[in-house]
Image (cartoon, rainbow, N blue to C red; front, side, top):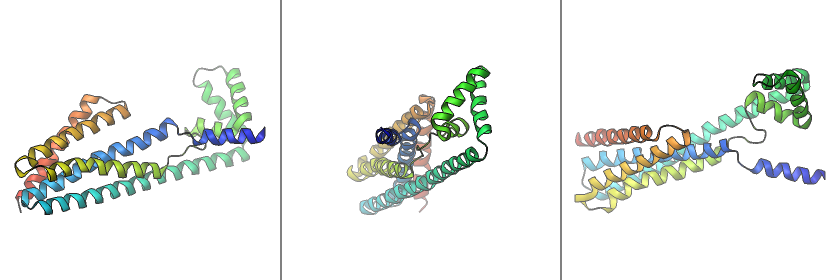
Length: 235
């Protein structure tokens, strides 16, 4: 019976929470957006300065790889710090449970009282939850952490790496495959469509205004292309 319970708990911890899934998706959306804008920035700067297609392609490809790995390493470092902070908070609560169990139980009771539950009922809930799993209850109530579910830095890193690579590939392919006469409008269209998609996804994930997010992304994309094109024209 105990073995079955241990297997059940292990399987439950293996399932990603919504926060974990959203964190991975967030990293992907940010990586994609960054990949699009940094690559098109380099492409426009170089293409405005030279007509050599090979030079343009190598510059864009180099920037795509640099951007993808930079975003991935940044996400890994950031989410690792978050994970370490969560683990530290759990360790602190575990120590408090050993040194002052009563205050921890009182904190759980207060949590439910503040949400409109009567003192008698909130005490019963606190005692029942603490009896079942004191540490899981305390870290959830006090720190908003689900025990065993920490943000995964590797998931965020790989999500950002892949998304940044795919995002940067759109303007790179458009600039490289189309003829000289069509490469500029094709790249502009590819960028605008790409940033529209990332704006839509970021708004959906963040429960924000879709129209505002799309307009903001499109404006940033246009400004990015404009600035880098004229930087290239200077040389």
